Structures are given as structure tokens and as C-alpha cells.
Amino acid sequence: MTATTHERHTNTRLYLQIFAALGILTVAEVLVVYLPAEKMLIAAILVGLALGKAIMVAAYYMHLRFEKSTLALIAAVPLFLCVFLAMALMPDHSAVERRTLNVAPAAESGH
Amino acid sequence: MSQAAVANPGMAVEPAESPLTPESWGKLGMWVFLAGDAMSFGGLLAAYAALRFTSTDWPNPAQVLGIGLTAAMTFLLICSSVTMVMGLEAIQNNDRARFTRFLGLTVLGGIIFLACQAYEWTHLIESGLGLTTNPHGAALFGTTFYLTTGFHGCHVFGGVVYLSIVLFRGMAGKYDNGNWNEVEIAGLYWHFVDLIWILVFTFIYLV
Image (tube, rainbow over all chains, first blue to last red; front, side, top):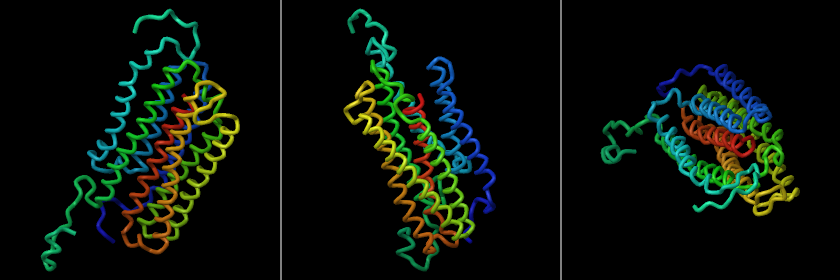
């Protein structure tokens, strides 16, 4: 057996615990959609739940938690860049006066 | 093999270790690839957000798309991630039979996911939602939906092919006795596919 840095015991229990957590969060996500709350709040909760699930998959199934931390940094870079990208496009969100809620068109303002 | 080892076969030379994953250059390479691939999906999702929020007649996804089926698909991919990591652990413990069983289940999970996606797409296309047509509102709804889920579906398909090859190689004994590195690398790709779907499902179907 080649020398390894990890113990070769069974991690089944851990994997199943993460699986259960992922299952619960998935159900929670679907239920949150139908909550009688403001859309922004629902969206924020959903993003939080999704990020939680993604981090669990990355940390435990992709083993990031037990790797050198710089590898986790490489994995975190696109997360940061994508958030930045989404935020960089936000000024375009206000480029149109009318929104999905179909309020009456506002008076044309010079842009 | 390092140059020194080739030039001086009698000389014992340490193989050049990769900086963050000393056991494998391939693992580091896969992580770097996944980081880039994540940016591709990030681009698609950021564009989706920008297009949706500048649209005046974007339909409510919960009313157009089948949330129930897709939630089941999400759960299925999560299950396939579990079977993948169990398969990796099996081959790390040199248990080829268990590895075959779990990798087989992972591939099966991927195939069923693709079948469900095909069923969902067929149903949506028949109801009139196309790449440029949408009876429920903004045409871009269909465009962004098919492009994002299609791009992900291609990743799943590629993953099914990739994992099938790993499965067959494993069954032939290529990963016995500690040579399981390739399985770990394939596992990273598959977990990435699952992870991206978790995000796509949230942003396209739920929000």
C-alpha cells in the first residue's frame, strides 16, 4: 500500500450525515418558495441554502476540508468572481424603468 | 518522469510534487479546470440575472417549470454524489466489487438524470417554450433556460461517459493496490456537476 496522508477507515457515517443534511436543505428550499414573504427575502434565503449545500458538497465530498487550504482558495476564487460579476451587472438592472411587477409605465426620464 | 531520472536511470530522484496536491498533479489540474468551468456557469447565471431583472414580462418559474420533478432530479444527483464518494472509498480500501457497485450506481444516477431532463424538455417544448418562443412571456426565458440547463446537461453527459470509462478501467483492475488517484479526480468532476446543479436549480427554478 502506498503511503497516504489519510486514514483508510470508513467515512460512510459522515457521508450519510452530509447526505441527510443536503436532503433536508433541498426540501427546505422547495418549501421556502411558497412562504408568504417578500420576494427579496425568499431569494436571499434560497441563495443562503444553496450556498450551504454547495459548501457541504465541496468541503466533504470533494474533500476540500482536508486538503491544503490554498486549494480551497483556488476553489473559492470563482465564487468571489461570480458574485463580483453579478454585482457588476447590477447597474444594468435599473436601466429599464418598468419591472416584472408590471406597474404602469413611468414618465420617460433622460438616461 | 523528471529529466534527471531519465538521464541517470541509476539515480534515485524524488518525483516533482505538485504544489498543493503532492500526491497528484492531475488532482490540481482538475481543480484548476473546475475553477474555470465554474466561471463559465457563473457567466451564464450572471447574464440570466441581468436579463431577468431588465425584463418586463418574465414568467414566474414555479408556474412554468416542474419544480417537483426537478427537486427529485436534484435529490437524485445528490444521491449519485454519495455513491461516487462511497465508490472512491471502496477502491481506496482495495474493494473492487464494492467500487464497481457504487460507481455503477453513480453512472445510473447520471443516466436517469439525463432521462428526466429529456422528459422535462420534451414536455416544455410541446407546451410551446422554445429557444426563441415563449407563450408565457419573455422569449429570453426559454433561451436562458435551455442554454443553462443544456450546458449543464452536456456536463452530465460528459460525466456519464467519463465515469463509465473509469468504471470499466476499475473493473479491469487498473485502480487496485493504491492506484485510485484517477477515481478521485473523476469524483471531483462529478461532485462539481452536482454542485453546479444545486446552484442552477436554485436560481433558475426557485428564485
